[in-house]
Image (cartoon, rainbow, N blue to C red; front, side):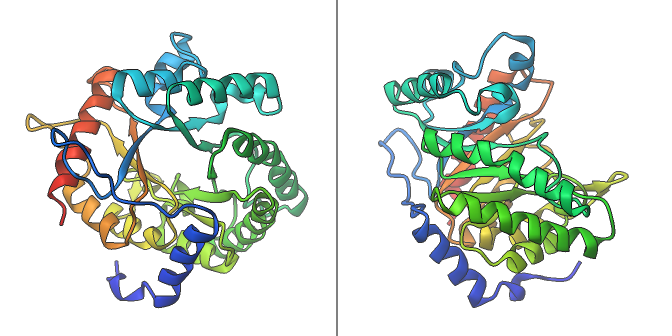
Length: 308
């Protein structure tokens, strides 16, 4: 892999900074009480961390923001649409979810959208249908007060064909989202999208201030168990980042993530000038969901406090 540090252009920096301001995402460092470390970012919780409990019915989507606040002291949440798939247009349900957030001082940050079709489908009619399938989630996110919806840039074909289709699909969805002041952000989520250079090129081609990325620390599987370098990938995506996902699976005896060097990764995030939320996304099985979330939270605090 080539060294991409020099490829982050002044245009990319201005594009990112200007986009944040334009869509109300100017953020500030966290000023904590004396018992907590001073961090350059805020910490949120991704709903996928509770995917086992949610799928088993031991928790529901309405309870999620309350648990995030009461059990972990977190004031930002990131929803996953599959846990309220039939509620995108249900204003009564969304109002109840919003009330619970308001009552507990929780901010709804984004909705992670899956299973709505491929935005980079090389078939133009299928791609347009996928774009339109996401409209209801833009509307729901706007109602809840989110700043973004997270989408996938997936499709079948050559890298060039899928990139062209993805550019067109993301452009159309971003145009719709811009009317609500929302961002459309793409996660590295397998296949071509897990190639940081490829995804960054697509975002540049879209060239819309509300179309960006959500770098995930761990989702760099290109397929067939071929992995893209996670540190390079995050660095390539950070100029366009509107959110960041701290993926974790296992921890060593010192509480460090086995798969990802959080100290190194957070230096990359800080170097990009990012001061927004970093979302905990625990996917491990050795610890319980709650213990895994706590371990990731403590690691973010420890590593974040040491990054200068």
